[in-house]
Length: 91
Image 1 (cartoon, rainbow, N blue to C red):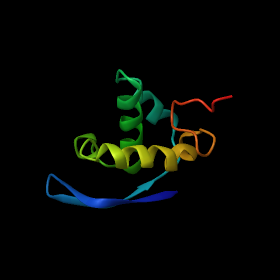
Image 2 (image 1 turned 120 degrees about the vertical axis):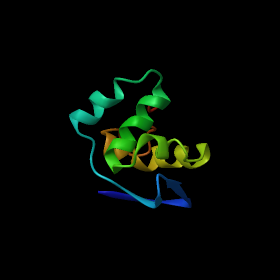
Image 3 (image 1 turned 180 degrees about the vertical axis):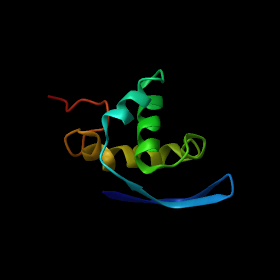
Image 4 (image 1 turned 30 degrees about the vertical axis):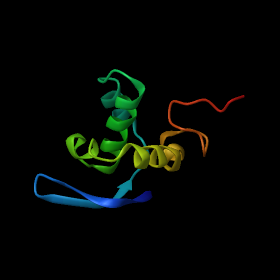
C-alpha cells in the first residue's frame, strides 16, 4: 500500500478526496489502461483504478501534483523506484 496526500482536496459527486491510498497494480488495472490512448491517459486510468477514485475526479488532480504522484507511485506499477511510469531509466 502507498498513501499520497493531495496538496488540496478534490471534490466530486458529493465526496471529498484529500488522501489517496494505492494498492499494487493488478492485471485488470493494466487492461483498463489499455482502453485509453496516450501514455498519460493510460497511467491516469491505472492510478485511478488503483486508489478507487473515479476517473472524472482523478482528472482534477493538478498536473504538477500528478507528476509527483507518478514518481512516487512508480514502484506500485512495477517500475523501478524513481522511474516515471512508462518512462525509461536513461540507460
